[in-house]
Length: 292
Image (cartoon, rainbow, N blue to C red):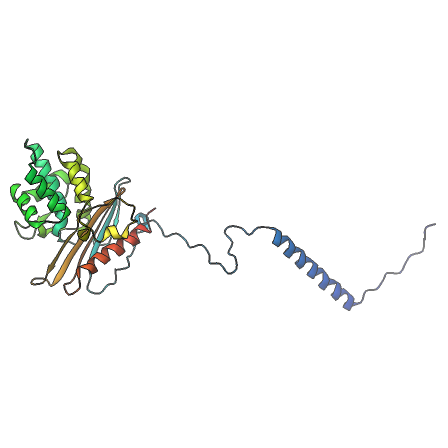
């Protein structure tokens, strides 16, 4: 039989109500913790005790970059990087304005132009000429370079750069190929032109082999900043000008994959050649980190 009598409401004291609320909160927290233990942490979430993933450096061709050597006291430097496959270029602010001596880096062009002219005039490269080209490129033999330079009419070989490669340069002193005045952009354009045109000339593939086989003591700089598995073509140039400017000119020019990089430097002559080599290496390493 149902009880039709109305029951009086049960009174709950404020203290009891507070206790119940606290226990409800505790239950909710414990439930959330248990569920959280069962759900994997998202891949992008920072886990306690572990560093957050580093943001990748932006593409050097999109944002440019400063190098680890930009603030070196007494150092003048200019650099240029070209992506020949995608026709992109980036470099220091002075890469297309400030000029310096090419030194022996111009020997790659002397060799390529010699082969070009020999082909155009219907002459075969002799064994002696081939030996001079190899010595000039692989061991930076100055006497061999002077023989080839003179045989082509001296500074005429620089005028050929304009018609063949679209690069306009001149020498500070007529008859001296080492004093050819170049920018970092010029250096990359000249070297890219050598690599592009040489295979069309008799003996051109031998020249490309020479550029990949420079003596280890002369292959400093850019190659040291690249992974050891890279195939690198290069021709550096260096000379201390103690009696005139009191500075070293040390230039590194190299190509790998689809890239051509030039790092040109001047610095006090009381620093060693290895200082310039290290500048080239460090700039290269910084550039490689931002290739995308």
